[in-house]
Image (cartoon, rainbow, N blue to C red; front, side, top):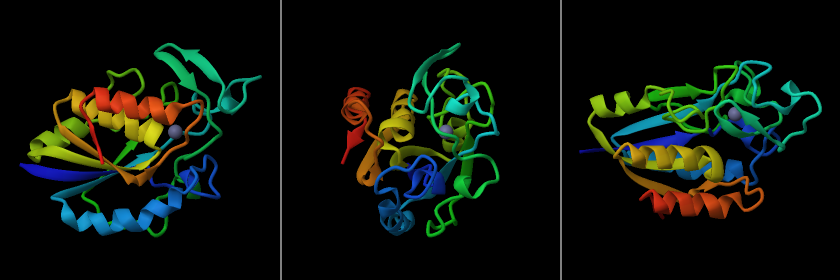
Length: 197
Ligand SMILES: [Zn+2]
């Protein structure tokens, strides 16, 4: 039985000064670095969008960041342009340890966003992470990173749904928290059987 650390989206654009900054996003870098040696595997995710991605408000005339729209796969929050492939904003925070086992990129298809490390936002297109974990014999996951109420939330719920034993280490996460999204995410994670510590 192996236990992996899943580090979600600790990228410059989600840290203070970035395009979609999460308050205190940089405060979790040191605690995450310190945790890495305690796990059998370390997997990092990276939000990785082409220019003009459909989740960007700038791709929808008349829309502003944080508006909601209907996409073919369901409701979608529109974001400021962020984590564009190859830019400094898409790079990991410079102090984050980069010696993880695997980097999984998501959100690289123009027409669909991907909050979860396991499935794109249609909840059915896989990223391949499940197969990687299964073939390495990993059954337990601890999640940390950004943001608690979006990518950590969706990744944790999907992992629990797939049968992994899932912990979210909340002191190494930070939230966007718009319109009660943090409380809703915490409830959804608990309902899915995720342990919040
Ligand atoms: Zn994104």
